[in-house]
Length: 506
Ligand code: XMP
Image (cartoon, rainbow, N blue to C red; front, top):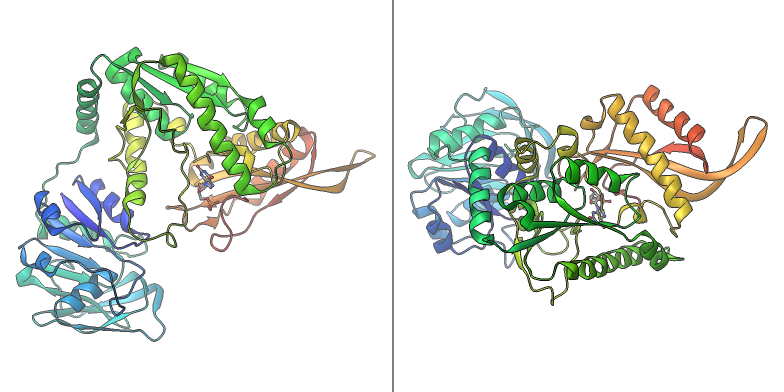
């Protein structure tokens, strides 16, 4: 397959996904993975990703120069291009203003990477430093305001300053295909149906006749993991569903219906709402709420799992982006989102981990889910944060506010489905503000809470824009919430992007 060395670009997972969509296995490894380890994997090609650092600083993130002498094709993207230039004898200077956003690439001299790409095309740039002189043996293939594509074809080494993996780069697809198939000649060896068969065989072999427990949340990852494992070992799998009381309206009932009845999973449903609410009483600090909910979750799960003494494996819906994030060396500043749905489990729950999705990207997990017969609307659910409504009710949480928010949120989501808008946005929900304002209903003056309708569009949840939902639609949602939900008399729409706002309000 193709190995992507991760220098911390927010786009590196995208490169991996693009390559897998072409049917070729790809793997993202930290940039400082020893060369020996890389070679043991016998890669067809290597990509050096972008990253926030500069080659001209002390302790710059480097790779061993010998990497370029293995007769393995290498593609450097953005920082990867600067790094190769720096290591192979060219020079990189600080840009004056940098380039961010779209730029016009002009081909000076085509090569195998740019084969079929028009003489002028739009590319996506995001860099500060720039290549000043190219290394000996290299040719300049394309320019924007700066040198933007270079190569040494005799050594199968290619570099681009722009990001071919981003959809704003018009012909980026073609470049990635050129690299993967024409330059690396990578075999098409990645197929999700094969993955399912292999995973099932592997689960059977690992588990034998032992028992497995799994925390089912109703979210995509744990559900797909559960159905996959169930396919392999049937009732040796015991799921535990913790109803924190901070979930969406009727979530518990729906999970029992969808997975308990339809898929025949054994689910132990724990109604722990009172416990969570008691622990949260009077607490308004978001981080404190997160901690309380996380700890309580672990406590409940731990207690519950004692019912299934003797289970040898703990299954989790860990997916590849979780793995990449936890192995990444980019340091805490760049890790904007490090949340985990299920916090660490206590030491004494000494079980072996079973993580059958840990090699898959999210869209692949969804495909596997559909392949296993899970309905489209379930595998395409928006992400839902572990602390749930606990962080969507601003300030202190109580049962009444949870009820109000569940009702309002349910209306919004229902309308999104009804108007075929759900799949066009990445995450949508309602936030309840503990702010009361005056309204009028019939002849009565009202004095009630404020709801915020929030919907974000994003590919990576690191940056996001607010969804341009139609006014008519928002009008319907607003009317329904105010008319149907006792406790809310005002609805607002959040038009903040991330950054500087975040998707959630807490
Ligand atoms: P923000 O609000 O940081 O959210 O823009 C980015 C994504 O992360 C989710 N999120 C969480 N998920 N536990 C989680 O499991 C959390 O504490 C948490 N906080 C935010 C959020 O829903 C969005 O998808």
